Length: 487
Image (cartoon, rainbow, N blue to C red; front, side, top):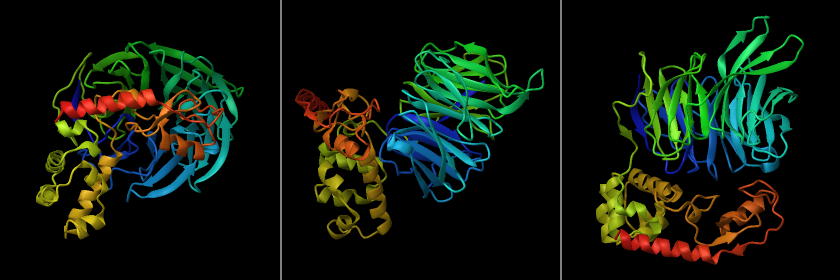
């Protein structure tokens, strides 16, 4: 059976990826952060969350020894973090400055691959943190990548729907076109190397996509130096696009997450459905097996990460048991407003929720509201509010910074959020790609991203921005109604 043992609620926007090392769990999100937890008790590490990306983080992965974590983002970088300190070890800028959608370490961590929204592929020498080779798939985005267990080959999946196998010299060895109608979303090689009946080396590969299928392939390296990909199973356990998949460390189980909000667990070799889990409230975007324990992590657009324990025993369509919540927030009225709109009472309620009762009297006597809260600094806390404790000042500032990074809470119409910042727009403008953005965000993007669209990655025919007054008025009406509803 499979039981839900805890739910992590540290992120404030969609969870995009989960990754285990031997002792840690990392999760990344559209909220621009990466959270790191102990895989023993799922307590968040002192240096978490990691905040170094300028935009949402799409993918994260650990090096083989777990000493390093790589994360990639719409900001066109792959960042390497030390898991000893949480400090940035390196920032790898993707060729062409394209948003980076996926990254993957080779099994021995000698190489790191990153794939971009413009179809570019970068192969990095991880030891020297230098770019070794580049490749490209035309007219598509690279959104999935996995190394073979030997580390000498890797496969990429694209929104065009194809799977392509490469060697470390970026030679294109094989293309499985239309592997998934409407696009691939994830792919992963099983950890074991197999041998075919004729003695050739074989790998088992799982892939999933927008066609609502999870597929298992046998990839054979033929003695004639050719490559053969044969479909072994096409699994239909989910009723909507399948967004993520992962093998267990022994290759015996396979997990997948879907737009239908379910997590499915299969017996990998024969494709038998073992469990269907239904605890997430929105799309399941990420899943990962622990290499050291019978645990699965699943991430969702509901902003949570569920931790499941897989236990011996037969079962199908199983669901959860003991559930606890870590890092959760109370959903009080003030949390549904923009922070700048908080009243003095809202600020005091927030201080209580965050365990900052020690400064409540000071904030109350100085009539601190939401707008003033956001303007506070360590210096003003000391000189104007006379908070003497350095530790307390640091804690208050950390919580304020988390507020500034946080997207608006549940219930905000998605069209009111800037696609770049994922925050409610104050000055929406229409760009040449037809999408609306916060003016400051799209102007900054155009100045640093070679005039490409954040949504389509195609060149913008003009940098002219047109005020979207209709949308601005709609946002103003909506925010005004929210204030009256919750005060």
